[in-house]
Image (cartoon, rainbow, N blue to C red; front, side):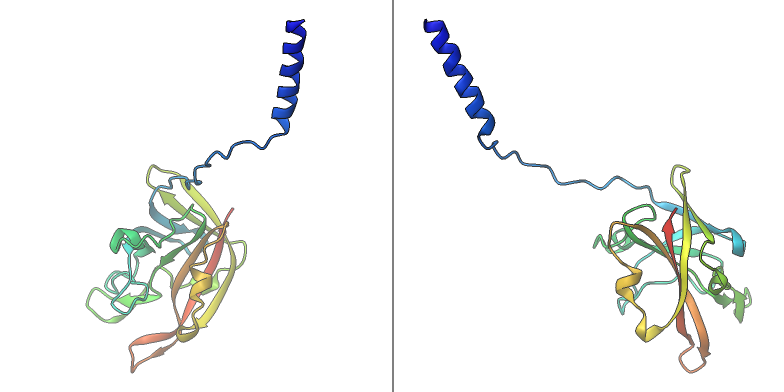
Length: 196
């Protein structure tokens, strides 16, 4: 008899236990996957290939650019590698990675007019491919979604550095008319691409 009562009590306890709220178990925050640094970029349509240097921000807080004396070299915005603020996105991470290169630069004799790596960036069209090689040899394939020109004063930074769930790559260079007084182009050309 005691055994029957014990089993009945156990059955009530088990049924009652199933309907009780479970204790709260802390869930560890999601850790983003480790993504290797990018080492090179290539754009087959433009026959453009370059190793990538790190870029930070200049004194005004704008994106640095590679040296004008080496217009054939591109760089990626690697904020934390330069100023340790952790606001960069690597190609292959969620969000928008940014690679910049010149439309033109200085010749070896110091004269303006040497074509830059992104001299023909504005000729890309949706569907064109961009490849980024990472440390370790992994190659990422991005596909251009749009190419747009913006006056430098109206550059949509929130769109270029967008932080969302997509894996994006935005290529930036100068464009438009050249302002002799300032020594700079008046526009920026941006090719917006997404991981394929």
